[in-house]
Image (cartoon, rainbow, N blue to C red; front, top):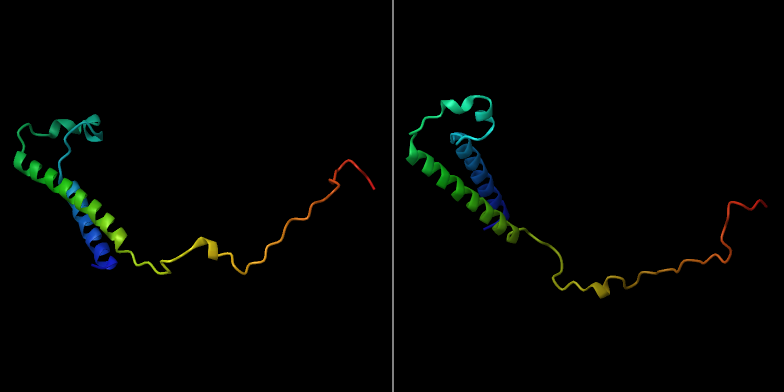
Length: 110
């Protein structure tokens, strides 16, 4: 699978994850309950729908994590695999810094 295919799959999973999270009802304890929105929640609710949305959220999150890790291995890399650091400085001239025997001071006036 190519890197582009992984990117497309990651985008699809991300959009699906956003939509699933937006559909879920808040379970309380957040900002909505502190501003008076907590009383509108029903006690019974539709438990099967909440379980499905929770499982779907976790499944999509794990799928996104796995796709991101797999996409890392599919990144196209160019270059020599036999790269050796000791050969990189061949042919480069280096100079040593010149030492000043008398340090310059700002106190002396010439």
